[in-house]
Image (cartoon, rainbow, N blue to C red; front, side, top):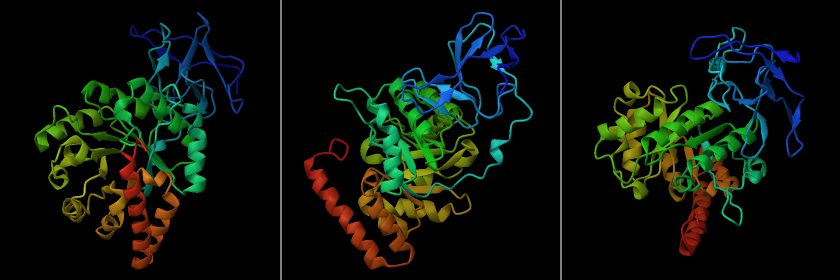
Length: 369
């Protein structure tokens, strides 16, 4: 890689930007990886960049690295579009696309199916988010539970109890540590505030998340389908190239708009709509959704772990749940038994999950336990 990499950047006045010089490699605090720093030649300010999509620093070979200032982790991010420069030098406002970058949109997307772990947010004894264990967490899910997809900042992860910055840092770390290990990293970006939800959606797109999910606002609740879709549409539009999932969990949100009704014509309003995390015991609604939307190829992930076998029987593609963090191996055996089909064995594994959850619920909520 040449020592000096020049790219053209246009500021608001349309002037040509500055040269960018690659500084000596900087080693991460974990001493695992090397990554370059970049400085502008005029003021020598260090800049941090996220490379995504059709944007690339001229002369570099492949995506460069992102330095996360919060925990100094260095990781390589696959393509999307430039979203953030911090601090932003005067003449660096937007980058010109390069012609030779491979088109990442041509890569076939893996279907979201099977088990998806609703991740727990690890905390330090003093109540800070513990990002240092995410790498170990990823390896544990893959090697011990055979679970290769995650749902971050959801109910189990207590996302709505975290600050926006904490949610961003968690999302970044899961995407970073899941690279080449996880099939999907879905980020739950819903919030009571629409601007905050939109901000989180933009951020998830910038860091290369596999998809975003949005929970319905649950204080001032949408009272009908049109109000709910209007909210979802405004969030999805901030990340139009990222698969979008609605997170349906009426026991917690109190939003009981039937999904069968919601899905009617939703692709016309939200082109990126991909499916539903369905955390309701209303299996009639789920069955109608699956039966009426076969052509759309939506993905339906069930979110009530103790009833997963019933959802599989009516056509669910997989499941998102907290128990797959530690019972993923057993639940995968249930999926295998169901596929054979050996329903007696599948029921055996489902009953084991039910017995475990019955015990845990007596201790408190699944999250706090």
